[in-house]
Length: 463
Image (cartoon, rainbow, N blue to C red; front, side):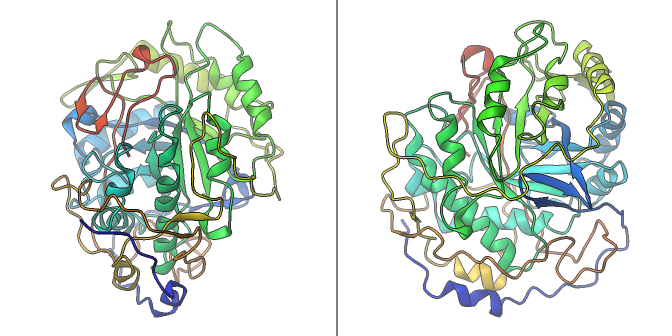
């Protein structure tokens, strides 16, 4: 078991990093990298609102990489264009595979990727957060970053998904935040462009606000770039949702981008009335759009399409979503976003927020991680192996931003990039890592529960 230790003088690493771009592949596609200003995403000088779907054909039980399947990408991108999407979220990728062709297909269609970096084997285990936060785990996470940083249509990375799924697992929050910090530090150390890093939370009423505050409080090096949560509270046939309006008001002064990483209640026939609310005037100040759960039907009655080999059968939900999007165009204004907001105040410990560490303290990066900052993470291990038992139950803590590298990355494009962005940059160490969608199965600590079985619609991911 590896114990945690504080990394000394990590601030000096940025100067010693040797991430020299090599000659990139010849196949290119042009798409503008997304940046952040205040509480909003931007595509150049225009505010960017996420309009997308969660995309994991086969579901988590199959553990297949949809963006290494070129035939599948070409099959599905036509439907993405028909819906008018600009983003897809992928939960599971094989970090030993090549993703050039699919990422080029998406870029040519104007589609960005929101990518989870965890997998059932490489993730934070909510039952053993200290042990599962280790060097082997971070190698897998960093390898994913290496694999996808070269694509200008990599919109963002999720550092975790619903690790905290009730009011009894909030002790995991410092480890989630530490991974978030480590990912941004790695991106900066390797001199990649500033690809946003943030967390996808369960919408747990008891600690919804505290978790959002926690990921946006503390020193610069420890705060998330964005925050997202999975929200199924707006159910058809309702044409409005007091719950959503209250949340928008609560987060109206939030200082980083906020969006829905999953939405689309299926308690009744889905008409997607939530689309009008999400992209309407009452919500665009706080929210930057969202991702509908989910593209393919996997047995949980959330699918927009049914796959049968190379054939795609559109379902009623596909037509309903297409109609909802058509009737509610993507906003063309800046939505009165928060341009210069202040970080949140860290939440205090209470009945539903059991975080013992002080506001300015986090788990220190595991011993040996500094070598990845200097030399890169190396090859990913694909869908094999696992890291959850590779650490120690002992936690060494330090200042929240200890080891954080906050300089060295460029604001847009790749390091040293010219003004005209291209999709495929210098070849980087091929790798990635995985995550998972909502399915009725249990895989050790990576257990999931269907939304219709859990009132709060919380998947029990350990990511």
